[in-house]
Image (cartoon, rainbow, N blue to C red):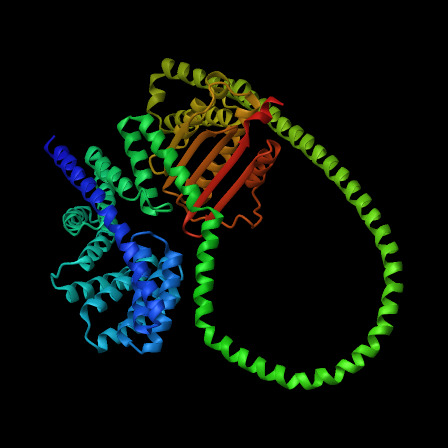
Length: 591
């Protein structure tokens, strides 16, 4: 109770700090814009460079507008190059390289950081050298180069030597991430507590949110859910103004998982829904386009000098061509009359030909559309017949196995038990024990195969219990951990539609267990509007979705999805796992 009360007091203090700082941020934006306007009027290069530089940092840190920040840094660098201010030039280059690293341009960012490292080493600037080393740590950490990342952290520790400030908090945040990677949980929690205390003192909301997220994540792993949830909720509040925050996404996911483990399914569902909505926003195509546009603008800046030289060459070539154009003008006017007469003749006949072609093209499009619709109908009927035939054959085989072979094996088992009762000495024979064990295994295998071919739980209990039963049967001591979640599914569902969902989940789990070498598998079913959404992820070795495999499993999944007029999105990368997101139209089952 004391620990929870302490967290509540800290939360109240942090909220009060955030409310007080909001008007200050507005005043700062206005003052920075006023400074830029004044620099434009005076046309002073130093003032313009400084104004754009300060505005760039404000756009990144306060408004989270990375694209505007990047543009302002580029303008600032142009003016500092004119003033030949080496110190500020390298400061601009550092922030540009840092944003390149954040946008995934790892090698470009690394090359620029190495140049900056050489420069700050020569001028013996320890603070900026430590900042560069932190970015190099991010580069090696992103590429999972553990040894190089540890060496970078050791160099930062030597450079800081117990000094405070923002660099120390940045160092602690990265040290927490490294400790978690190396599974040093106790040390990571100590660093997270230190990070939290220092970030509260510094009143930097972004650093505070990162520290809270780190501590919440560590406490969650230790099953300390109440204090973990307090940290995570406060992290979400601090990041509420950032539309595409990956840290907020992680906090939603941890809150959903924690509440589910605590048995609070309503809260788990609420945060799970927020997680899904934010994840969709982050993956939005417009966000990707904005990042690509940012990269394009940076590359364009580097090539600006080459373009100016090309423009000068072009101007010189245009002047030399003007005289030739004058000489050709007279000849052109003479030919114009002749060409004009030929043009009208050709145009007359061309219009007649074009009209005939348009009519023919429209008729051809109509015919193609009719053929396509007919092919779609045939394909759907074929899929329906194929799926129905598969299920009938499976049902027949399952009944034959259960009734015929299963009954026969059970009869043999009874006969052996009778022999065992009559001849007690036969129990001592190793062959008899081995035969009895093999017979038990055969009976169990027959039951498992029959259950896979025709899930009885689906017809008796419904979709969710059937999938729970499937997951339990796949869950083994040495196998991967399988997590199943479901939200908002209808209580009653058309039997063939429910069977299709069951078969899709079964096929994907079979592939993950046989080929993916996964340690964790996540299965989620939920309802969005009129769609049933199947979301399955694993952390296995991945595969190439475009490559054709000998197994028919993936093709069977796609066939069932196409039959129900659904969509399937497969995201799989080598050694990074696989994700299936499938949308099925629930109204299709009612047609």
